[in-house]
Image (cartoon, rainbow, N blue to C red):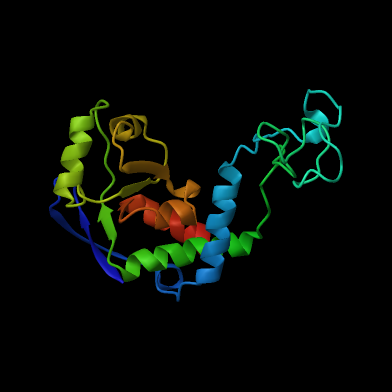
Length: 209
């Protein structure tokens, strides 16, 4: 797949980038994508939720009503889960939701996500750029020039660029990442994938195996 390289003004520079078919041209593996996205979202969970079970409640342990003959459910003390304000049965406890995926599985997931974007023609290549100072107005102008202003944008840079990151930080539908930090979830979560020219080679090196 061959794409034109645009400049910051959205004009064709005359250069072409050939996307590696071994990365962008594979048949997406939906199950691997599901696994990787599931792991990413699980890793974001704090796991600090907690509710009190019966043994943790404070309250009298006196049996409120007789065991039989009342016509209702049997219950013991005021902490019974049957009662309003009582304990919760098998409530959530703090836990770690993280789980492991093999490196090759995660690598295939990133390839599959990039292949999905290439198949949907949602990839734009822009030549390497920077801003003299952090200005959100400059970044908004860039998105308009690249004709992605109406999309959810993921900008992939070859390395850390503070001015570009700060310029995009206040924009709700924009995320800026380094090529080495790409993951399947962030790729799939955008509708406009903007790759800096130098980041293409970095992605190829990361996913070439």
